[in-house]
Length: 436
View 1 (cartoon, rainbow, N blue to C red):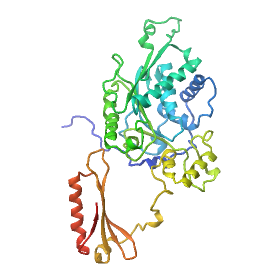
View 2 (cartoon, helix red, strand yellow; view 1 turned 45 degrees about the vertical axis):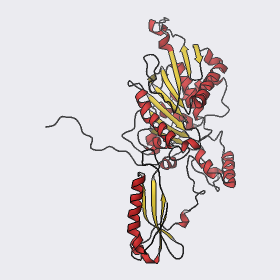
View 3 (cartoon, rainbow, N blue to C red; view 1 turned 30 degrees about the horizontal axis):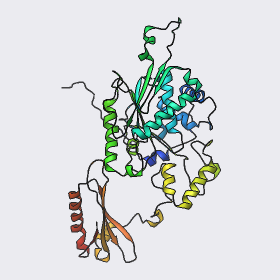
View 4 (cartoon, rainbow, N blue to C red; view 1 turned 90 degrees about the horizontal axis):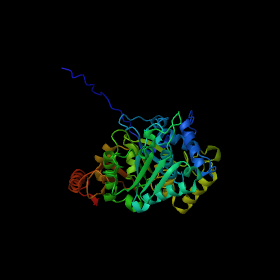
């Protein structure tokens, strides 16, 4: 007997990596024309500043806001698909000096405060900003918003009042008259014209936040991992992941909300890296250039913001990093690649990708056998993967990877797996070297 409830036959979530996203970046933005909303936002920013910005905004910036405003599908741009993507959840990874925090953490906030809405979303009254700490990222953001407001004659003329603290900003717009030149009772109410954004530290989170009866309609999460040391801490990473995936979800208004997660990653375990590839966040990634190498010619250079980051400037930074041995940092901060080809200790040319495993195991006595390990203290969801590799080493120094285990395992299970490998490969020569 049918209950007439449709059962999905397939849920499509393409398998992709952050590198796949980066490889798909095309700064020609073929066929893209900025929307009226994107132009409106950029013009608003110019009015706020009272002058033309030092550098012209790139097409990258227009495209970014058209994704956020719902005019462009980022999934199509990167050539991937996910049926489990949450509406209005965006993970934004952009290179350093791309003005992402100023545009998304300051100017977009002022734009919403002035208009009382977010294009493509609707009315916005209350939201939250999450930084690495209240005394750090949150205070800096709130002080920046206050500073921009106080320096802008345009903004001060647009609001009835504005209040600032190190943890919150509040704007009250002037009441608007209707077509008959009358201010309605609803418009006269201050609450109808008020925009509030409160700040929260990443460790405390926004659980239970509200402004009167209004639950947060948005969150802006901005560089919540403070430094490289925090990026290696299981405790901190676990807390941040919980805050992002649980606390924020339960704090947001159930009648409609959006979330923008901004950052530049420290390592592969950075929560932003997971958000970019788990299929539930719409990914937006923009490196400083499509590609880079020592022999890259100017005619082949495709940069994210060439008016500010010219070919000459980018190549100078790149060559300096190569010379000083800091290429990994450049690739991470500017190209958004956690590892780079030229910084690899083991090059592809040193690898023999195909060999006869059957021949090796059946002539095991001709090799020296080793097991190398990289154990973890726990197999929890936020922990690293534990790894065990079995190597057969020939008399001419070839290292042949014969067996490999890479899994999240509890410490007891790791030793059990290791003993299984010893029992399996020790008979080859009667002994096997194990490094733990």
